[in-house]
Image 1: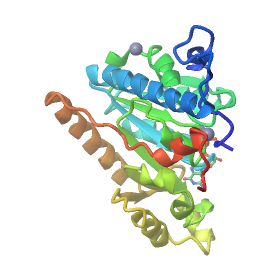
Image 2: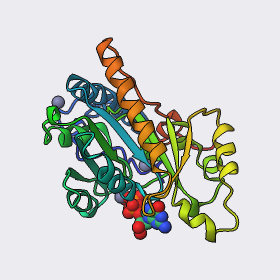
Image 3: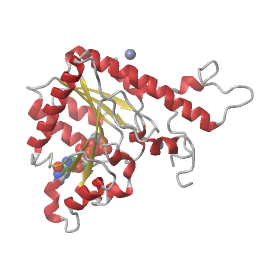
Image 4: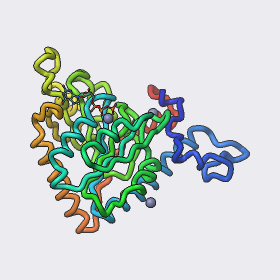
Length: 276
Ligand SMILES: Nc1nc2c(ncn2[C@@H]2O[C@H](COP(=O)(O)OP(=O)(O)OP(=O)(O)O)[C@@H](O)[C@H]2O)c(=O)[nH]1
Ligand SMILES: [Zn+2]
Ligand SMILES: [Zn+2]
Ligand SMILES: [Zn+2]
């Protein structure tokens, strides 16, 4: 459980806690809560730095979040197949272990950097910084960051990206936004995935899924698609076109956009009780 696991101590920021590290415990002792909160604030600094890297090169960075297996990599495969001629795309992949997803992306002819988080259930800004320094950002228009499959923690960490997209596959149940509000509140776009399976599911109601999103006071659009059957992809591509055009417009005005970060999840990571 994230209220006690300290899962925001990762290989990217552990040095801050070590002897002579910025957040090393003082002799009188800092509480674990203070240390974990300080780690989140260090993460925010790093994220700002990452966003400056992206913005300097006119790159739009998108964070994909969802449960394990809801179709993030399949969506990226279909998107690359359709848009690799229109945009220069790279992918940063986060999983606990394996290069599997990065290999699937590379098989499409696109550069992919795999981050193995080990035990951490989310990506953080330090890990993404290591990955983006392995890319020549001038070579790309669009960078997707596929976060670790987890419906809570990834929404608590700014990675330096611009937009959050939350996927909900139809096999997960239409009440997921109500039950796991943290990630769905953070979404700039909700993608209902694997809709080809609706024909064999008798209890998933897309309207109810959208209602649950609205009950979180999130006005983000919901798009329905099937990546493997190539259905509903045009509306998703249109959304991406608009997002890239808007981002370029903002950059010309010297502006950027910061994604929504959900402090509920941060509260759990900071070691406070989830149910006061
Ligand atoms: N029927 C159907 N299956 C799909 C669709 N998209 C993905 N799948 C299947 O769902 C499984 C998981 O898909 P992935 O794309 O690997 O899911 P993921 O979200 O990247 O998974 P993690 O990275 O492990 O979190 C695979 O067997 C896919 O073939 C879809 O649109 N329709
Ligand atoms: Zn966690
Ligand atoms: Zn994946
Ligand atoms: Zn840097």
